[in-house]
Amino acid sequence: MYFFLLNLVLLDLGCISTTLPKAMANALWDTRAISYQGCAAQVFFFLFFIAAEYSILTVMAYDRYIAICKPLHYGSLLGSRACAQMAAAAWGSGFLNAVLHTTNTFSLPLCQGNAVNQFFCEVPHILKLSCSDSYLREDGAVLFSIFLAFGCFVFVVVSYVQIFRAVLRMPSSQGRHKAFSTCLPHLAVLSLMVSTAMFAYLKPPSISSPSLDLVVTLLYSVVPPVMNPLMYSMRNQEVKDAVRKLFPYMLLKHP
Image (cartoon, rainbow, N blue to C red; front, side, top):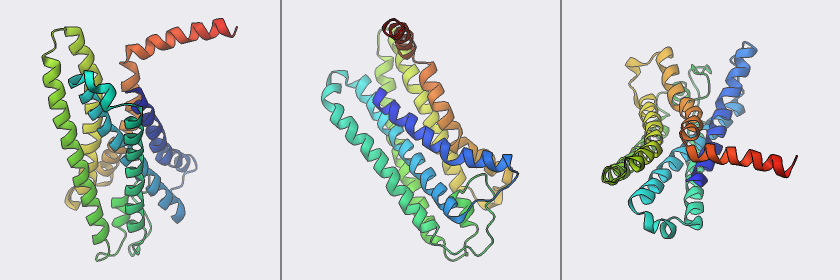
């Protein structure tokens, strides 16, 4: 679990670093400008980190399923090599997703200006600037990614159904509480990310507005990466106890 949490923290840091520093700098200098190359880089890295993070969250659901439903087989099913391979697959899927959408999006001619009505370069808002008959290929790629993400979400939900069935059969109330405190934050963050991202990319133009687009984008691009470290660290008593034990030891060894 801690190995996947490390990957999740790195992806959260990368996702936030892709969008917020530029937005804060623009707000500080009272400008909304970004270069074409900078916009392409922002799209690539954001899609890379967000897709890899979603894959890691899916892998973490499988990790919890094995840990709770098949604890005696955990060492054989999720050894260090298997964990490294799944993490590498998550990062690789994020890279391929970013390459696919970035090349498709920035191969389109922009015929309707160059003003992206968002605080960072987001694919749906860039597609609004393209010619009406030239963005069907990227729309198809977006739909494919959305359905793939929905399939992963179904896998996560099925995993959690099995987890909750196993947890409810536990005789110890303390064990049930520990299992639920481990699973529910993960499921809440994943549900928020999937629902808001699908709404952002699939909502009809008739209900689109600048304020609504901003709120929805913040909910799937900023809130989950910010909340993940808080939710996973604050509820983990073992991490708190380990930190308390580590600092006195370091002070004794290195006065």
